[in-house]
Length: 468
Ligand SMILES: Nc1ncnc2c1ncn2[C@@H]1O[C@H](COP(=O)(O)OP(=O)(O)OP(=O)(O)O)[C@@H](O)[C@H]1O
Ligand SMILES: [Mg+2]
Image 1 (tube, protein in one colour):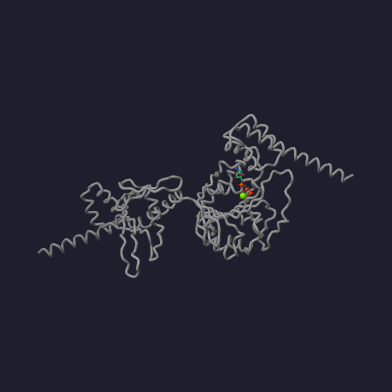
Image 2: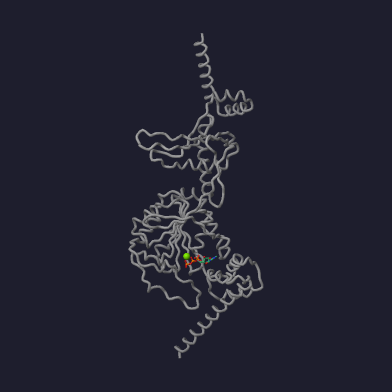
């Protein structure tokens, strides 16, 4: 008799389950909502619709590679811990604190009106059959949801978690400055304070660049649709000390990208160049500074004697040590570099910027500067009044001063780089106030103007003498 009662119950449950599975989704949701109100019925609903569990382990495979999804889930949950009582806190970049759940703690999340549960857990360390070393303990996150939402949760919700987790991770992550050593990258923490707001240049030009960057980062689908790799090339050119390197730092800070400072003179050949470039991560800026000086990319080394003599009267910065570098054995060629930028890079997922800088744009090979290769050419030029005002605000916290007028008149007549303006605005002694700094600048501007006048007069005299 007991056996027949049991088989009736089993048949009943089986039939209920079949009916439940085959009834329309809308009706199921309606019943679900109803069941939430009636907690007793909820149990029955749970009985009919068992929970599904998805485990996301910290490591994958036999080589114990860290599973990216685990980190992304941790980042996602760090801002979704309404129910968890036992939390762990770790320091991230910029003194932020990231929270996570302690082991065997749980929390809930809502997606499209459906509640899911996240539980953190740990598989203890255990002896491994094949290996001498025991398998280390393995943490995991367990996602639990009702079976009827399986499709929505495994497809839409998990995608949403990974995407949001990646965004949170990017915001918390310390950015890195990579430099190339012996065919590999080494990195340090990138903490340059440059911002677009503190960059001295015409406001319209600055806005245009910011707009361009914003359009680029939002254009993933567009690039995919037109079949182009998601990358953008910038060529920054202008005299020394006009802010090319500072702008790269401002770009990296604005986009929260890593910076790869590629020193071409230390790259042995095209193969090594490819290896280095394929080893860059998404969301990065690859920088090749002073491309005209570091290498003659047509295959022959640039001769120092070919460098144009500095124009007298110009306030120019001394050449950087990079430009004074001894010749190296590098066999990187222009075609090697361009082939990579145009071709292979398409295979590397994620967005990348490549930035070239030069002091002499006219000396570059046309193959490098033609439109379509370097998408945007940005000229950084001598400091004008608008630029001076930005620097005065940064360095002296001054937005207006009676001496500004003289500076406005003088700065129109001379060629002075923002670096030199900035240098003169810095207080020279502890007693110097902002006014003294402005006077220092006026002095330099007048000196530069006078030497330029003398120079023009001398050339006129020489010209007249030659004519006579
Ligand atoms: N446009 C600018 N706005 C704000 N600061 C600037 C600007 N240009 C230069 N500076 C200041 O001058 C210093 C040198 O500038 P930077 O190294 O960016 O010049 P550069 O154009 O890269 O020069 P080079 O051609 O010699 O590499 C920076 O540290 C910064 O403080
Ligand atoms: Mg520079």
